Image 1 (cartoon, rainbow, N blue to C red):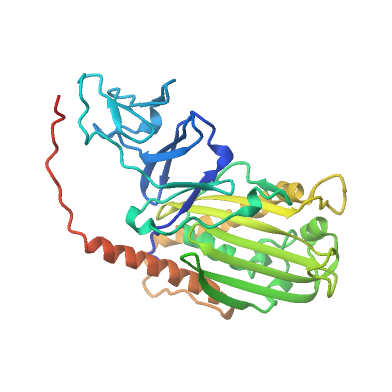
Image 2 (image 1 turned 90 degrees about the vertical axis):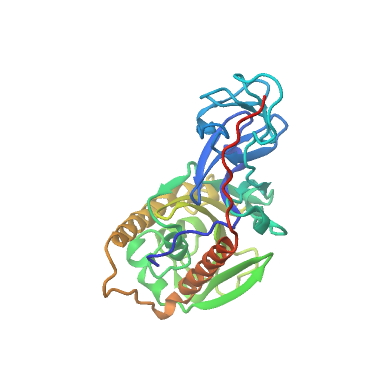
Length: 369
């Protein structure tokens, strides 16, 4: 684990669609790569290497002109929405063809904007995972108001999201209790649309719901089906289905889908967003005028803050040499171990492919008039 960095060849969720209004520059660092992005007047989100091709000035700290071109704040080089430089103030006339920005692949689907920070060729035939709950007309859905920046490796977050044995003691009194730790865990693995996934399945009868879950889903005692799935390195999907005994799958069922959208900034930092969705019209126990999805979104940040508290402290312990220390895996940690193996295998594959490419470093060419 101490050597784990991040996977680059992957679609990562850089933000919700609503975070990209037209004509507004955005700057990101994802998987160690600086990226500048904006939504064009035509409605398309575009992304490029954030460094001006002239002297590396960060274009995300420059400006978009009224005509839609991006003007570098250092020497005024202007780029169009394809990344091609179309004007150099100090060198009027023909712009050299090599004066352009490196394109970063972008997809916008189901209310989420995704980018591929790694080798573009590796993205061939792979599309981002689907997140239909974000925009489904059959759901009440609420996304996190702001992205959460966490000083921790994103694998720690994925492992946290696959596990509920930490609900006690970390979330005791809101979504957790000791009974969570005793629920049997089934493991499911597979590959969907090019992504190796791992899922935990917990099905329990006669479960007494903790306080937050009673408020959201009404019942004191339930049959509960709870799944956590690492869909890809950028998406973890959590589903909870509860109902009176024998009523799962009927109109009596309540629950939510929690989409956790995450990406690595670098080996020690991540960005985390979430989206909660519930059946349209479901309301809370104490106030039937409040939609359940809205109440979950209001109360969930307390749970997130507790997870962040733990993740930050875990990450700090990597500052110390392992010496004779090694992590202990419990029987309930099978999914966490598989997730780590999947991501580390992807990382090894990337390194092997990088070694197979012999880099050529040409001398900087002068821009011809």
